[in-house]
Image (cartoon, rainbow, N blue to C red):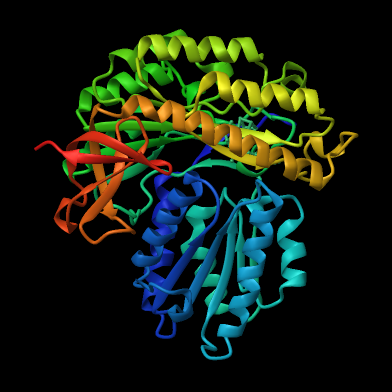
Length: 467
Ligand code: SAM
Ligand code: SF4
C-alpha cells in the first residue's frame, strides 16, 4: 500500500464548513430535525457525536425516534458482514417512512461506505439514499448536506485521505463521561480485518490538542474520559518529540480528571513503560482491554498478530503484577480459516488460563480485500457456531470465577442510569470495568458512589452503599 501522510484539516477549511452550516441553517426548507443511527465501535459512537454537533450547528434539533426526523443518517460499520446487513436492512425499512414524510432525507456514512467501490454500488441498489460519504470527510457534512439540499440527485463523496480534523462541534452523549480520540486509523493489517482499509493509515493527534480537550472536559464537570484509538499503545508514532502513550497517560493523569480509561490496546505494542505508568497513575483505572483473538501460535501467525501465546500471557502476568486485581477483557475470533479443533482448544485453554472479566466473542466473517478472505479452508458455519457456543460457555465459567474476587471488596461506581430491573436501584461501572447495581435514585446519575460488593448476579456485581 502506497505511503500516505496525515492531512491536517486547516482552520480555513473548517471555517468554510461553518459557513456552509450557516447557509444550510438559513434555508427555509431545510430539515428541522435529525436522528443519527450508529453501528459498531466506540469510534463510531464518537463520530456520531460529531455528526450531531454539526447538525445542531445547522439549526436542527435531535428527534428521539428516526420515524420523527426529517434527516436520518446511518453511521455504519463493516467489521463483520452482519453489521453491514443490519444497517442496509434498516436503511431499506426507512424508505417506507418517506411515504408519510416526503421531506425525509436519508444519508449513509462511515466505514461501510469507505470500502472501495461500495458507495457507487449501494446507491445503485438503494436509489432512495440522498447522501453518502466515508470516514475521512465526515467534517464536510455541512457542505455535503448543502449540496444535497440544492440538488435533486444523490450526493456521494468518498476520499482516500488520512485526515485529522480538530475543533469540530461535538454533541456528547453524556455529561459525566466523554470520549477523546487520540489516534485514527490502523497500520497493523491483521489478516482478517477491514479496519486499515476503511480508516486509513495510523495517525496521532497532537498531544497538546488532546490535553486541551481533556482540560476543557474537566472544567465542564466530566468525571471520566475514555481515550479512543484502534491501537492506542502505538500513540505518538510519527509525531515530533519524545511522545508515547505512557507519557500521554501521565500528562492526562496530572490534569486530575477522576477516571481515565482507554481502548483498544494491541498486545505487541504493550510496553513495560506503559505497564509501569498503569501502576503509577492515580486516575488511570485498573482495567485493560487486551484482545487476544486466538490461543494458538500458528493461527496467531496467520492472523498477522505478531505475538505468541506465551508473549501474550507474559504481558498479562506483568499487568497483574503492576496493578493487582486489574480488570481484564478481550476480543476472540473463532472459525478463522483453517482453524482445527486442536487449535480451537488452545483458545478455550487461554480463556481458562487468563480468567477474563468479560470477552467479546466473534465468528470469523470474511471481509473482501483482506488477506484471510482468500485463504483456503474457510470453516463451515455449523462448525464455527458450535465452537463459539463452547467458547461462550468456557468464558462464562471463567468470568464467574474471576468476578468472585470482587465479593467483599470496596468499589467506586460511576452511576450511569436507573436499573432496568428495579425502580429503587441504579447501575454503573466500577473502577475495574465491571457492571455494578446498587440501591439509588435518579439523583445519583453521574455521581461516583462507594459501595461494598456483596453478591454477583449474572454478569454484574451487586453493591451496598458505604457513604
Ligand atoms: N483494533 C482493535 C484490536 O486490535 O483489537 C479492534 C478493532 S475491531 C473493530 C474489534 C474486533 O472485531 C477485533 O478485535 C476482532 O476480534 C473483531 N474482528 C475484526 N475483524 C473481524 C472479522 N473479519 N471477523 C470477525 N471478527 C472480526
Ligand atoms: Fe483490525 Fe488488527 Fe488494526 Fe485492530 S489492530 S483494527 S484488529 S487490523
